Length: 350
Image (cartoon, rainbow, N blue to C red; front, side):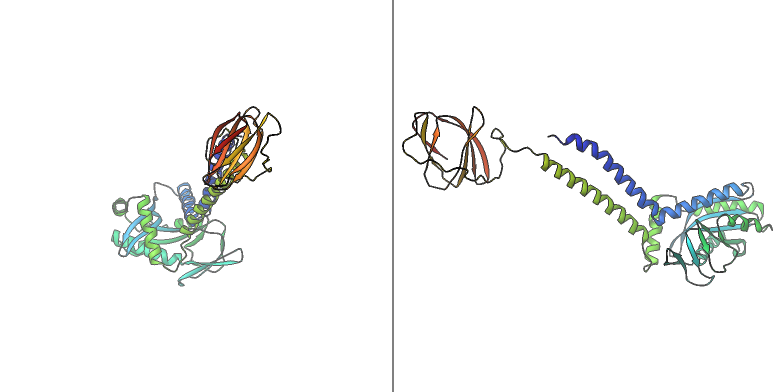
């Protein structure tokens, strides 16, 4: 039975399963959740903030003294520069303005994460140095998206959902001159690193080096994705091998490939010196090494004889005269040859 059509049928589904497994793992990863949250924040800003007044720049990586810093969103207007750090999180959020870490409680589990106010403060200091502008003109915003709930009292610049837009609109006193806005935008664009996979990889490596005690969740999720793919491929390979073994035909004498098998003696040879009739004769068998011999009638492929020959030992058997196919197993190798037996006595030396 040819199982290739079955493999051809199953293989596309294996590819689909691998793809879905990878996508599922990717969606659950912190990296994807972060990008999704940033996209949501960007869309809300574009919809609710007048682009003639508020100029938006997104995903800005800037060089810093000890590496790089990545800012999710920068919004420039005459009312100030707004630096936004997006957090796509769920569950309850506990923290305060000055602590080093905050706590996320979800499904009765607690997770520590860096205080985003402190994180954004570094962003602001780097941006202030690049722009050579007074820090009082730069406003920090932490924008939680998802179904996160703030369970402790936090400053008004820590927002949930689209509330960050309300905070921006609350700043309605012009503090930046119109002609300075273009220069600010130009300086940011000039100093930002090129948006590329290489830039993001370098920034992630910098963060991992800096926060050596933090859990490298991105790597964990990627390893899980690779492990799932390996398991699926291993299962597919194992299933294919099982099907091959189940559908593998029983070897027949006309096959020419080598096999390793053990053929046991199925009948005692008749060692009588005188044949029972003229249709029969005595066949003398000998071998230079231990041998398994099976004879098949060439007319009907019926097994006539199966015998084990010991090295150097002579065996005599009575068989019917005719033409046979001999299956010979020696030292783990199989060969087939034709044997004709038409006399009263014959010799077959193997």
